[in-house]
Length: 131
Picture 1 (spheres, one colour):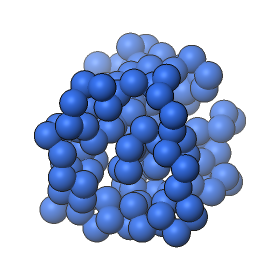
Picture 2 (picture 1 turned 90 degrees about the vertical axis):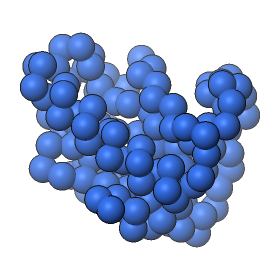
Picture 3 (picture 1 turned 60 degrees about the horizontal axis):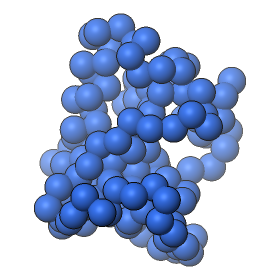
Picture 4 (picture 1 turned 45 degrees about the vertical axis):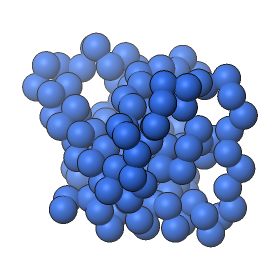
């Protein structure tokens, strides 16, 4: 079981933002912005384009719902969707609140947030999810 699967089943703690029986969304622990969330399928699949068409469509719809919750919780121009990352062999989408394209620079210094800030951010997104 990979690290993201362990997060999705609760073996490794995370700051949950949303979930259903197929997908799980949680805060990135090295965020570019408050509200930076990772969305994963519960099924272990390394490459997003190895997902079956119907599963990929459901994944995108779930990510859209999470993005809408993020935007309500953290007003911004848009929520960027980025599929990036080779360090974890598990498909995932980054959802990042942005006001400019420069806000999606993965080389910039990440935010350092406290436990309380992470909890507050995830609770805010959870409260907006499904509205």
